[in-house]
Image 1 (cartoon, helix red, strand yellow):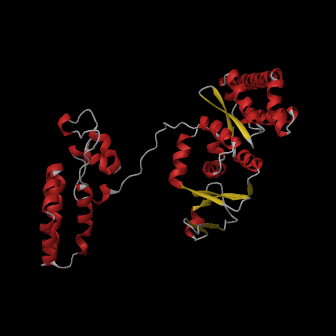
Image 2 (cartoon, rainbow, N blue to C red; image 1 turned 30 degrees about the horizontal axis):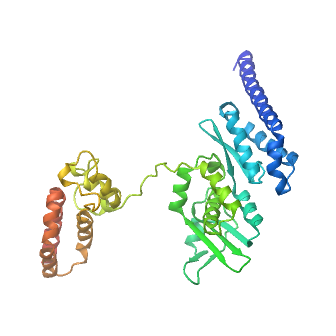
Length: 366
């Protein structure tokens, strides 16, 4: 790169850094202007205003390096509101106890894992707290045991050579109360994925394990006596999640076990077969679609969910190798006549493919 072009590039970077620094100091100045309001929230917790602002400076300096767009996009009024909420919970916005995230220009106060633990200790109800994530390797090697019920327990022997990229299959939290009670919670991978999909926080990417541990702690807090500080911090944290976020369904596995091809018209969008292949519970949605004639819709008080004919077809097709007697197979096939007829009405192609699979198996058994 020619020297004059490199100089222009450096100048552009310097201009950006200067703008970020100016906005950062403007944010600190706005906090100073509202010192008395913030201080009145901090005083009951024994936290000084200077200590609060020092933690904020550390967080904003880190934001300058990792997310400079934060300073150009966030709305000043929402930033102040987030800090008021943080001080009201008695947490330090240093990125450890709490952080300030932004979503579409709106700053949001976000209690972190350490902050939730601090709130729990502050209630005076707990004797001990233990939370951690479980990796795939630990689970496969039997280093994690979880039992629910009257004599439930959690046993975990974490591996000492974990890596940041290790697959996490669960997170858990165990709280022992001073009155002798024990509250435990295990959040499986499927739920952690749903929570991550709803999260608006960029911390989810950089600190996935900490955010998963936070998810388990939140669930334990939901089971505890509803102390005011617990209810308040959870209500504040709810703003960091989009409850309407779409979470893709896991495949049902029916498609792979059906005989013949399953790409015909019946598997188009809003069709019953397509719903069964995605998730059986999607049938209700399909039946309510605009492309379904009114006369086949079920009344609201009694949704008409058809028999899972495709599931039967898949199971019957999979079971064919288990038949070792032709007469037994023929008898079972005749016994399933009603289901075969229903399958033929729903999907003739699959019905014919299943008939052929049965005939082929009968020929092998002769």
